[in-house]
Length: 448
Image (cartoon, rainbow, N blue to C red; front, top):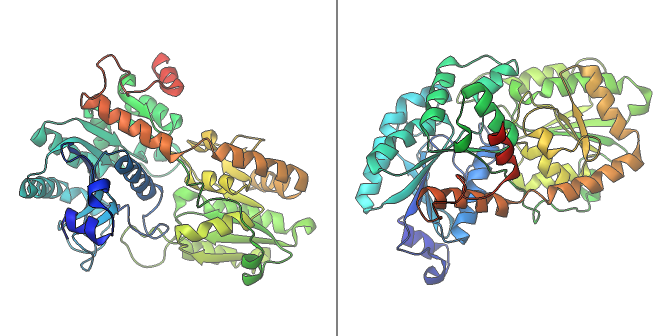
């Protein structure tokens, strides 16, 4: 389906909804992650959500986008509407099926060529190319040369940051990221912490780093009565600890299970239930994964019968689970931002989170939750207990959490990304800041 047909099929007034035809679009490259994929399954997570929300917001402001992804489903349409003014384009590169991310790199040259052919077939010109993740950066670098347009790079995760957190170093990826950091026209970080990692671990030039923190949809994540959901899950009379995320070592669910083991051994937590929303990351592989390992651990000792694995939960159903929990736990080894922590806070649920990455900017320690350094299970158990055991403190944290969540908006994220595009494409005055906006965090970075 072509773009005009898609807008018509969506039932919108095309004259009012289509962007200015004289304004060139932005080419968004996201080789392996579709913004329309179901969140919580496989590799789908915060990156998919961020691309979708930003493209929706840009479209509302008259900035058209084409998001290019690899076709990984034979039955999926060639094109799909993200929002009036933004479309998803699936390119036939590699097999029409999911593949491990390790195999994506060998397809990057073919993907770049496919984007160029697609643009030429439509007579389409782009003013910016924005890459998401390092594979996309390898594509965007070629597109910048072919089209002679600026290249914006977002990483979402960094190999050297993960290695610093104790995970195996992907050396080829780290080397590729270093080259991308050196060559991109602008680097967009999701947090000040990610920006600092770009500087410290990759020697990124300070004057090419921009910070655009994601937001939360307060229309979806708003307080609600969860009594019916509690009854349906058989949780009446239980205090609930909630975890949401892909089940992989990076997300640290094993630390939470160890902490929960210590908690349920205390008589005052005999009513505790742990809900785990999420499924194996898989990364295109098969066989036993992290979920099976975690489930075996949860079946041992005093945890038996206390942990429920809910599998992948649709994003629109997560608010009920956040809201019914007494505390949400985010024990990630590293996080560029921390969507789960922000969404839980929007529902007024205190968060116990690792004192790493963007989580230290989302959670205000001692006010909206508790930040925990290190991986010691006893320390995590004590932090969770400190929230569960004090209803008055928990209530105050919940109120503060709601207020803090309102400061992270998609509108601000979109405004900043749009300003970056305007600065690079010459729409902003030459005297404007390198990112197109003044920002205290960026000023601090540049000041050292």
